[in-house]
Every structure is written in C-alpha cells, then in structure tokens.
Amino acid sequence: MRENFIYDKTIKKADKKYYQYFYPIHCSIKEELNKTLKELKEILSELKMDDQIIYQDELPMDLDNTILLVTDILNTCFPENFYEYFKQLNLYDRIKYYDMDSAYLEEQYDQGNGSCNKIDLPVVKSEIYIPLQNEFYDTCSIIHELSHLMIGGLNEYFALGYLGEVIPIFSEFIALHYALEHFPSHPTIFSSIYGRYEELLETEFLLETNPDYVDSFEYFDRTKYMLSLLIASKFYQDYLINPEHAMNQIMEFSRLLGLKSFNQLMKYIGVNIRYYDDTLHGDGMESLLTSFTFVMEYLNQQYKKVESQYQKRR
Image (tube, rainbow, N blue to C red; front, side):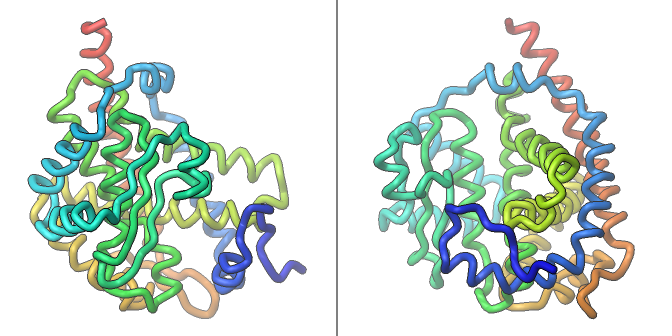
C-alpha cells in the first residue's frame, strides 16, 4: 500500500515534505472526488463552446492597458483593499511582469510554472510573477494572483490546501463578468474559464487511462482546483443575485482563510460538508454541483450571444 504521492521529477523536496501532510487525507476522500469528477464530466459535456474561436480571436493588450484594465476592475468590482494592495505591490516593485517567451526570465521568476505568487504577511512583502501573453488573459492572471494574497493567515494547512483557490477562481468569474459588459463581441474572454473545463475533462481522461494517476501529486493538485471551482461557482451564483452581499461574504471568507478550520469555513458559507474521521460527510457536494450547473448554463448563454456578435463582426 502506498504511503505517499507519486511525484513528478520536477517537484522540489521542500514541496514534497509540505504536501505529504495531505496524502492520508487525499486517500480517504479520493473516491468521493472521483464520483464528483464523473458528474462534472456529464455537466461539461453539454457545454457548446468552440475552442478554436476562443483561442484565435485574441484581444490584444499591452502592459500599460492591462494595468489600467486591472485598476478599473478592482476599483469597480472589488472591495477597496484589493486595489490598495495592487497599488502598493506595484509601488514597491513586488509584481514582476516579464515576457513569457523568454526562457531566461521564466527561469529567473517562475521556473516555467507560469503566473504564481509567494505569499508573505504583511501582504506588501509578498511577490507576484506574471509572464505576459499580451492579451486579456494577463488581466485575469494578475487579479487571480492578487486574490491569493487576500487571506487572514497561514496556519490552517488543511483549509489553505483545499480552499486556497476559491477566491482567485471567483475573481476570474468577476473579471469575466466585467469583460462581458465591456467587450461583448470577443469570445476570447472566455478562454481563462474554459481552461478550467478542459482541465477537468482531461483529468477524467487521465483517470480512465492510467490507474496510478489517482495517487499522483498532479491529481491531488487538480482536485484542489475542482473543489475551489465548485465553491467559487456558488459565490458567483450569489453575486449574480446580490453582488454586494456576495462580496461581503467573500471578504469574510478570505479573512477567515488560514485562520479557521476547513469545517468552520464550510459552516460559514452554508455548505453541508464536514471533514472528520478521515472522511467527508454531508450532502453539500450536491448543492455545489447545482450551483456549478447554474453558472455553466448562464455562461453558456452569454457565450452564445458573444459568439453570435463575433460572427457578425467577421
């Protein structure tokens, strides 16, 4: 019987030591995660996006315009401390912008991992690394990485390990929401969220074709994103109904993240999932899937409108 993850050769020893904490937890809930993933696959099979259109119709952005766009999104859609942190990090050169095609710069900053961050408290000691693609995706990347810094502490490993992507993925939904209003004829704005769908479908394929994949570190890493995507969908569903209430809730969630336990956070957001005796309990996953389905149907409708305008523009 295995006692640790199957790691990729590139994973550092320090990371192995940290993530080894999660292996017993991963073993206890992987069947539940597999079941959820299969349900997600059925939901996503109904998605009618044309990825060729999404990736071919670029929305060009230089760095100056990207920063202006990020500034406007943060000022108009997020609580004020998001923009304040963004402004301070730029002021102290804590956000590193560089050419994603430069092998030298990628090695210097992100070691080929793409957009990422190093969190420290207070926040102004943190760093964000943004390899630029010079399109709308850069805007999403900056807001995503900035959102990682909106946490109350670094002590609750389990909560941070499984819920650390909730706020960043929710922020992608908000950036997309903004773009739908301001760039209504560019389907490329869906590419960031669409990448989440593709990753889920690819994960299911890898599970079907490789029995050992379920014990890999990569699978564990993807399941973190899966759970965070479902919870972020719940927040975005709430946002579509009442933006102010949803933002207040996400700010309190972010304040509690890293300070409170996984179970306390689930209770706060009203999701009936609890972790004890090495097992997930409750029917909350079904309610999260319902929220996810609602959001996917909503975005699918918006995509069809955007695609129709795109075809007319062509």
